[in-house]
Length: 115
Image 1 (tube, one colour):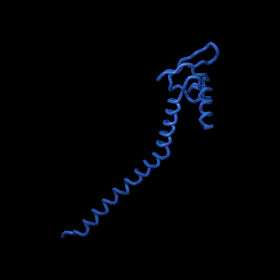
Image 2 (image 1 turned 180 degrees about the horizontal axis):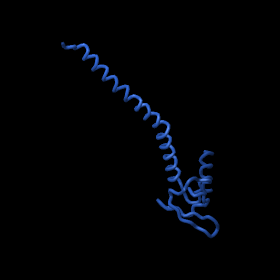
Image 3 (image 1 turned 60 degrees about the vertical axis):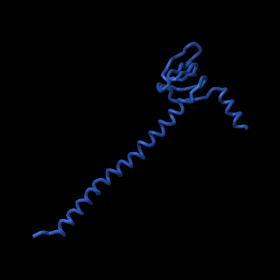
């Protein structure tokens, strides 16, 4: 009348099915993390480092493609000299890349390299 062996087998099989259902989701999350999330975090870290190292005299390119030299810089504002008479104000986050560092900084780095 009571089949205890059959009930134990059904319970064990049921527990295994939950595990086999969860494993693919865990694997998908791991793949997404290593292929998408982690590289994006590394790019963001290098960009923040570049923005923090900006200084007066650096030649930069904005996210819009404008090339200029930093004339003034504050915590969140950058004033770029585009030509002899034109100065434009941008958010610091609008700087996309540094094309050349300030001459004084380059000389200082070269002097440190010699020592």
